[in-house]
Length: 294
Image 1 (cartoon, rainbow, N blue to C red):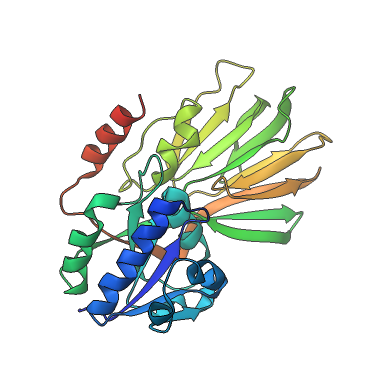
Image 2 (cartoon, helix red, strand yellow; image 1 turned 135 degrees about the vertical axis):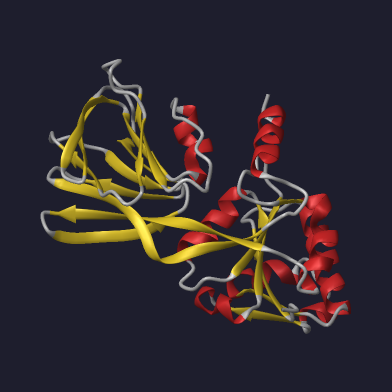
């Protein structure tokens, strides 16, 4: 499939180098007669970056309209790609270009972008489906909130000054009565993020699993657990704690009240469709990122 329409998602904050790259990218795509789409909210920003003649040759759309493009290109770090993926309503190939610090999910580096795009526009690319997960907040049997997530969800206090208690169940069977700073429940993709920093294992993205990682548990017997993503995980607040929050992918935060519970399950209706970098494997990326993070 040749690519004729491309939607571009920009990281929230750019610098002069990033802005210059966006200008070069638009000119490069215009010369190849590719229809370019940006989010409507970026219009004022692009008016400062592009010439008036270039502005006339690009289009603006709302987030819900992104799937009218053939592919979507994210320019930023993993956070830019994750924010897009969590909110998409329809599966579309995603080309992740890393303009952040550590890119575990973005497949391409900034200097690889134009060479990669030349092949992608010809239809010379492969994709891989990756699982999304779902989180819900319940008050009894009433669902108050639900969202997809890519990396992880965290239940913790906003000011981690003392321990608080949680009950964690897997398929209605108690597995933790946890006293500590909180808990991370991550997908395999998210196993190299907060979960890893909290002492959790690295899990290959092909594994169908959730990783449950206590944060600074009071008891040394509470260790990280890897379970099937066909399971249902429930996290229950057991005390009248204030300032307890559910954080989704490090980007969205929701307060939790006494009597509320958090449920984590696999997302069955939608998956990520990531355009792969043929020059890299998962373990190549893993070693590269760990070396660069030293």
